Amino acid sequence: MKLQTIKVATQSAAAPHAVFALLKDGSTWPQWSSFDAFELERAGLNEPFGLGAIRVFITRVSRAREEVVALIPDRQLGYILLSGLPFRDYRAEVTLDPLPGGGTRINWHSRFYAKYWGTGWFWRLFMMMVLNDIAKKLAKASETCA
Image (cartoon, rainbow, N blue to C red; front, side, top):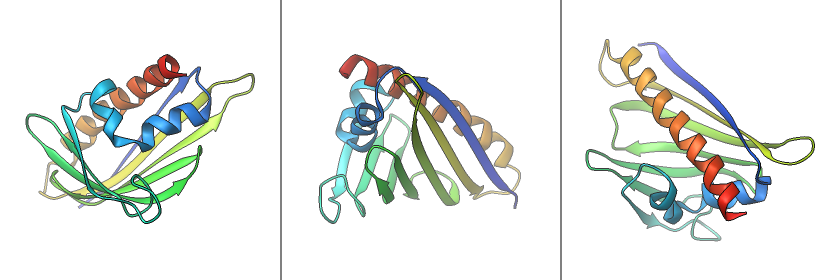
């Protein structure tokens, strides 16, 4: 099966620390994203939403379990999908780059293999729409909270 890759980017007028605060704290996601609910299944090593945290994002049709595997304050959050979607080896990284004059560029990169043959193209398009929507809503929410 072919590796599927997705890259989406957007900008926020908010500083990287404001964007990162919302990105990292999964409990805020139902307030600004399309997710209906959030559960922290396991706290991180040194802090609730830190490395090793298992975050569960819930919609009417899915329950995506993710583990935080990379964390650089105000700069990067990386996670892997543990269950909930028909993917294998899903990994994503969100990097935040400060913009000259203020603001943040949000870069969301993910890659995965579709679990079922012939469905990769569909899931790549679906996830591109989902991640683009989340990135834009994160940008807007961070501006409101800043």
